[in-house]
Length: 278
Image (cartoon, rainbow, N blue to C red; front, side, top):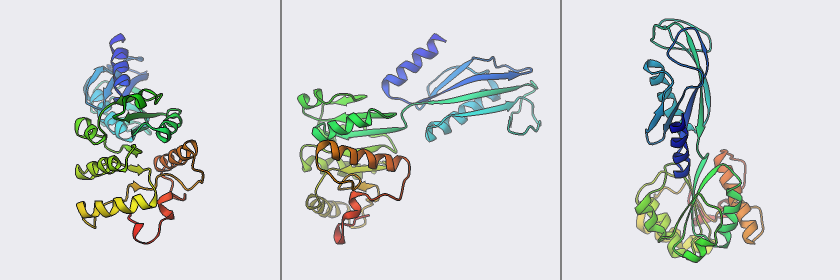
């Protein structure tokens, strides 16, 4: 069991989600023992066992689904082929007993990349780290990055080069607030160029800078470029212009995306005419 917990600690340190499967109940005959544990990581690494055979195969397959959905579950399995039991899954086994497994998702509910570690980013990070999110911050200014505060991972390297070197998780949330709009554009265009599947890209900017960005982006990627997950100006329309107030606006928008809320007023919805890009 020590190896299981050491494995879990390594995964948590590296920001790799996993599902821990624990035998929580057993009735009759079967290979499982209450308390036995199997951990399966997002990368396919595994340690431990819940009994082997068809039970373990089904447990692993269900864990893969839960990794994608980022949630917990509990399932009762009947270890007898052909048996019909309400609220239970029947497995092609001859043991005749039953087992209940608890599947615990261990990982962040969202993976957030924050490009830029300046005043607004720092205020945003403080709020984000009060939530079950994994935060990666990127900035090429070491002194600014050192002053940032809490983050799960910090990278001191050029902004767009980070994407080339490390990539971005599928379905991630990306917040772009670098010290120059030039670098903002580089980051977002790199995401478009690589056709990365992210659920949200927010850019800190004014309508004037957004108009400039949209013109250049459509020149590069065509008028039909897909920007439905692009939010600029970033944030919800809450009012206020201090770093702390902007941070609240940004995190509120992130939470709206996370919870799939559709009845809120985003800053991008204050735009009219040619600037309505989605």
